[in-house]
Length: 359
Ligand SMILES: *Cc1c(COP(=O)(O)O)cnc(C)c1O
Image (cartoon, rainbow, N blue to C red; front, side, top):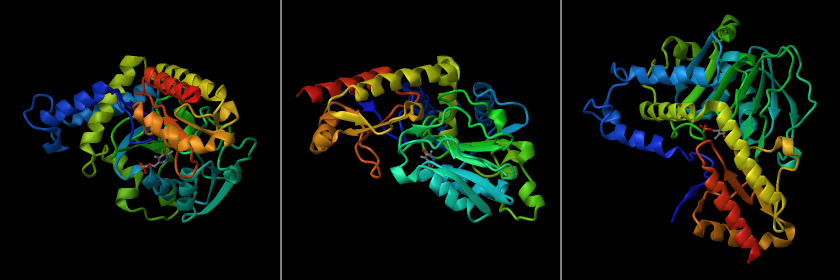
């Protein structure tokens, strides 16, 4: 049976990326050794990091003066590294879900945190609008795509001259980003880029150093400057996930870059949301179309059909749909439709929903 991978993360990767990785595990580019057993300092590994960094810059059109880092620790470690490096006095955060809340909690240990708006009272089913970000904050932080609730901020928020920091774990490379407006963009790579184990950080070089000037001691490994200076090689980086990330970046470029990824994302999302909106038994959880994520599409059964949820899950699973169970905090269903998910998989899910509805 053909499997359709709607996992939220780790998640679907392009087949050719997995095949390239498998080859490198057996014999890394003809050097006679597996990528699992070479030194990260081998002269033939450095080009992998260099090309991955160069492709990040090319595909996202990153201006001069930024570094791209490949680190360990997941996006969750960035919740702490961001305020460690950037929060001197005050920061503003938008609370749009579990990941925002975790970022806020870490920041509170470093200074004053102004939560400018929150959609917590309605289980984060919309993106707050019209909030005011004070001008005197060190930065404004937001989660670009709320993987669990299925809301997304695709357009860079307009917050005047305040520098932006964003967690783009689950929508990086799915649409163009105006990187020049940000001091830092970070994410775990396991949603749209690579297997678990590598975290990307795009950081503006001259935004660094203010916390240290203000007297803060930053532990070496948590100091972005360490990794900027060391070219992501201060210590052993996650070699295999970086290699796979490079293959994905090459794949994105060959497919036509982020504009093409954005076109496909919208095509997938339009297909699935219209099936949900027109269904007799399913309904969407995010009502405002502008707030709907293209990456994680959430839906539930209408109240009068609630008792059919487990039946549908079994039906979908029997038809090869993987990972469509919603996050435990929301319930229902979630179809994660990352870059590598073919439109056929979304069509298969839509067909499966219609078949179930007709039964
Ligand atoms: C998955 C996810 C995280 C957590 O990433 P880890 O790499 O597991 O720490 C953080 N933020 C967002 C938006 C996510 O989707």
